[in-house]
Length: 369
Image (cartoon, rainbow, N blue to C red; front, side, top):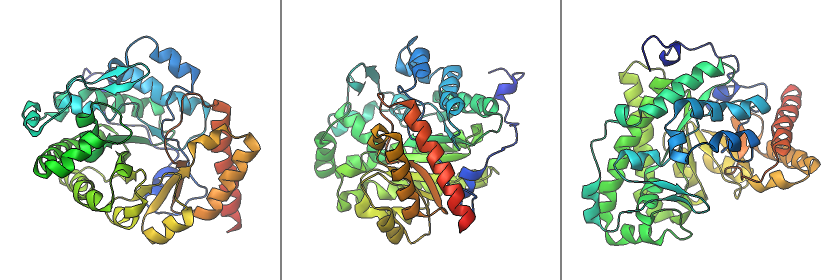
């Protein structure tokens, strides 16, 4: 972007709704804030229409379209946060790997990493500012277009999750190729995880510099690991990311932002995750809120965890589920969300019911507490 372009400046409009940020920092809120993973998605007809003109990763590399897709759900629903439209696999691309989005199959790596010698193909010293400039431009543009209505969340995939995609060559039910590496080539795994961690740290710091007001790290494949492997191949890198991002922001004189970690299906390590340096711990739908509160000891804010498929329920049932969820989590140190992302065939009206229900019931409850 040209220097004369106001959308490239980081002199942003003042924030009008900071409820999500307050909850993330553990401050008192008047109601429970809510946003949805995959809130910009194919369940919206306007999303499908915007996306129809070009392939997925071209969209990711087009800041104006990323901005438009990020804003679409905000026009429909009174959500308390926006999350930038992008993809976790932009990092393997920055490392020099080819990734395509195959219709009906999902992300595909034509040349995955098969053996440790393949690590030599990776561009270890990534200039994140240059390689991922399009994400930073999208964030800056979106911050301006949001006009301070709600905060903007930036994100990244976590090292193990990205490594699993890079070795499997796409999605997998078992992650057996990636897990084979953990058992056969632990040193190569740590080398790869460290390469990824370094890039992720720079990427997240860059997102905050560009205007992100919170960060989420997605460890989407945590459920394929047990406690031992998670403790060796995921947790140390999650910790390093939180610590280094905070240190680098401080060194650059940039204000800290709350960080969220979402390790799907990793209840077996919830105590460790809540102690890993993140302000917010995201939960999938398979854990009971009461148990999550007990394990995390109220030292972090919790985010989640309605079963995404509950959005298929009739609206009155959605109201009941939300009410029970807020009863169990309580109204403070809590951000309502789904326990994973939305699916393409969901009814936008049911999303509206979910958001409205969280706001209505939690406002009432906060007044009476």
